[in-house]
Amino acid sequence: MELSQSAAKTIASETDHAQEADTDAVVVQRVQAGEVAAFDHLILKYRERLFSIIYNLTSNREDAADLTQDTFIKAFQAINQFKGKSSFFTWIYRIGVNTTYTYLRRNRLRRFFSFETINDELAPNEVVELLTAKSNLSREGAVQELQEKLNEALQTLSLKHRTVVVLFEIESLSHQEIAEVMKCSVGTVRSRLHYAKQRLQAELQPYLS
Amino acid sequence: MQETERSSSGNRVTVEQLLQVKRLEKPGREFWDGFERELQQKQLQALVRPSVWGKARAVLLWAPAHFGQISAAAILSLAATCAAVFFMTGTDQPIEIALSETSHVRDDVPVSVEEADTGNVAEAEADAEPLPPRTDFVVDAIVPDDRDAAPASFKTHYVVNAFTIGAAPQHFKADERWFEF
Image 1 (cartoon, rainbow over the protein chains, first blue to last red):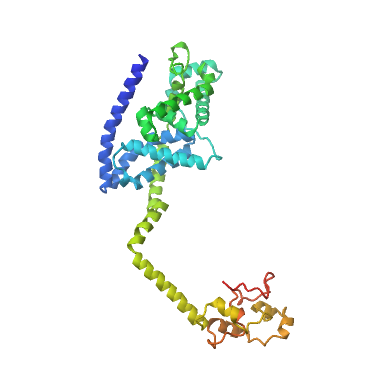
Image 2 (cartoon, one colour):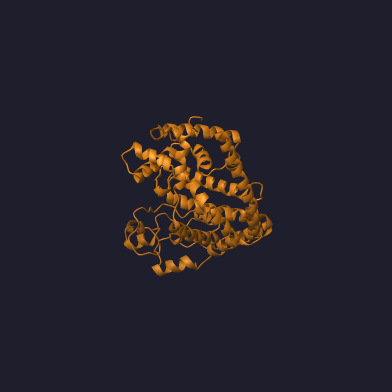
């Protein structure tokens, strides 16, 4: 039952992305034809998703903002090189991920975490209620503690493992889409995801038991 | 993997459920207003300063198309340099050869105006030919009176700081032919 629900969710997600890709292709053609203002439409559409990916890779709000802006600028400068072989969102996600990789590799020693705030009222009740019950913290305190622990746990993963977890669990991309973004096989995505979840389970054990 | 995908109905929280909390980490409206402003500034900067690859590509694409012009420009600049050397030295020989072969250049002649002025090389001056006044140094450096013969104080004229007034530089040695390029 759960497996069929998961499969159905993946199929629905892929269908939505396919429709999205068609819409984006039209806008990209307009930009390539010289209507540069049309690129703003793509920025508005993808900025939150792109920021979310980069933020979850870096765990730094300010760096994520800079890297997201750099990604859009690179994408705009290279827009004429986009041939439509992949969807636009796959292409721009790839630029964002590679830009983030380059930044993180150059700044290995300089790692400051700067988290986004969580609206604890929107936090999943099941999870927060359980956490609050286990600790002496308030609901808000439990959410903040969980947020810090999650970011720390993600940072223990390698860049590639962290990326597959972020794209699959947080951004809800399919294995195929992740493979296109990361330019690897679907099998590689699955194995990285499996390993990453095992590592996270070990790191987050106090919150799981 | 099955263990991590177990539902939380049995009072267990899964890794997936925890990770979904991260979907709630979203910036507010003010953040996006600032984001748009900064992005516009960066876009304008990108227009003014093309990328390194853009510049390299422009040169690589431009160079073959203008190979003839580049070659002609290179030849002309080389010819201009040789002509300038010729008219400045009054000889058709390169500077360094003229300096090394000339017989009238004397190591005991003070090689800087500072040394001549301070008198620290009075001993060296005892056997040296009398030097022209300072103004002659300046004139000789710019337009030699006799272009066919190297001036007596030829060495002096190639000292960069020869026209400054002050003590002789401590590091400077009289026999140092540092003006040879």
